[in-house]
Length: 348
Image (cartoon, rainbow, N blue to C red; front, side, top):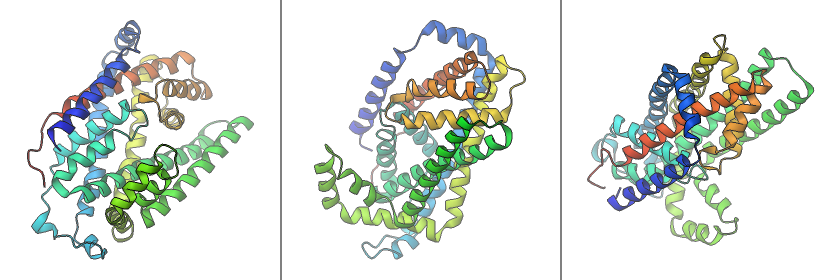
């Protein structure tokens, strides 16, 4: 990536991070950290390992998208062989880019408006823009796809472990319908590609209509190539697809340990299954408000609703939300710092 673009992402992220810091009550933050003690360090360390799940998922997708079999499936372009043209992408450099990408997504209103373009621009210096774009789109699709399965499995977990009321039955029915519809949409996207569909959708949105149509006209062949690679991964490499999905899904369930660690501070009898359910419903509520940076307000509201729905005290929900918010800000700051660390000097 060119230095000016990298610096642009860095400055943009720092500005947003500074704005979010102004929304904190620092006395409340200090009291929360003092109360959490060493469990807060356990939460920070947990996410150090969880990001390896995301990075490994992206890494195996990248290794699949640069196989020569993809070029043979396309009549538009002839790609060079893996051994002759494609350098190996360093794993720990990819980890750095992953952390920075998530940091930009946390800080950017609209979520994917920051991290995904950054990851594409960084990775393109290794494998070219088309393959970088397809790998990032594939990983983002898999990341969202795993959330849908996580929410759907959490509905089943709730039915098995928690008492049912008519109100909760209606909520769970709506969540189930939403997840099944989302899974169907993404399965269609995996089979036929999603790049052209995404820009076709943008071409009908006021404000983005003209830009999207110009982009489609100018980059029609590149979008077709990206869709071919997306479909090829699902069709020709099911092991890669399922491996990436299982890594992302495992990351969702393991991330519930964060809530478990925090609740142990105030509730020694905390139950891990309930923590999974709290995370599921909180993340669902927060993603509905995806347009807000760091889901400010949405995540806290989700914690309050999910903890009260599971017969936990409101103060427990407030405490969990506070510690999670501090963790997010910490890793967002780390991600912003890493943008200007380990730069790749040459571009292909």
